[in-house]
Image (tube, rainbow, N blue to C red; front, side, top):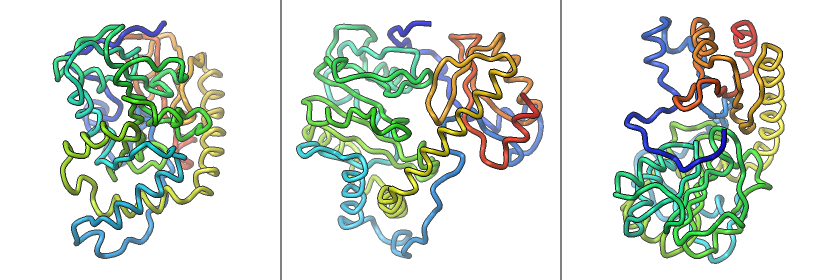
Length: 317
């Protein structure tokens, strides 16, 4: 299936939704294994936090410690600004307001919140316009882009899943005028509940986003956790190696049962199967949730099981 301009759907589909799955198939929520997202199932170990991170308004020192750690971890070039936000989704919702609405190119299928946010601000989908969004690597097929693909006055590069392969990052483009690179803390570090994301790039656009988000957009606890985690290079290296091994292990399980690998990343895998809803139903009867897609009846996406979950997943498949 080729990449085409993304179309806005009336009801946006996402991973997650364990409550609804449990209501349909039974079982308590805690018993379910959620493979419908691309969140690292072995999260960064939460550090001990200073009491003031819970009780005081986030201060400049804590915010600077986080952005300094982010600059080092992602090798942010001089001349690019960086803004921490309460999740990448908060930035995605605001970015279409940075320019007068026009035409935005969002090659798809891809993460559908980008198209929804642009449409909500009056943008139309198409090519040859003033804005583009490149999800890099793409969700769900793992496609990667290059600097040669950057062409618009407003270019958004969503690198929410890029930390599994930092050598592919387009962070060097952060100094390009009109460019914003998005980073997510919840995926690679497995701490989606912390709600932390980053916009990196054109200082003028980052300044606009900073004004839109207002004071204290990130909690004190998120500032502290993020600064510690982003400084832990050893954990990041070990995690990349483990995720790559687990992705290969999952591929072997699915292909042995008739599925074919389409793509994905080391945090989620995309498979071609006869009937995705049949596979999803079979897994759900074992209280394992997966991801299907309304535009491709033969696509099944699976996140990685946690270390304790492999026997259940193997038995269910």
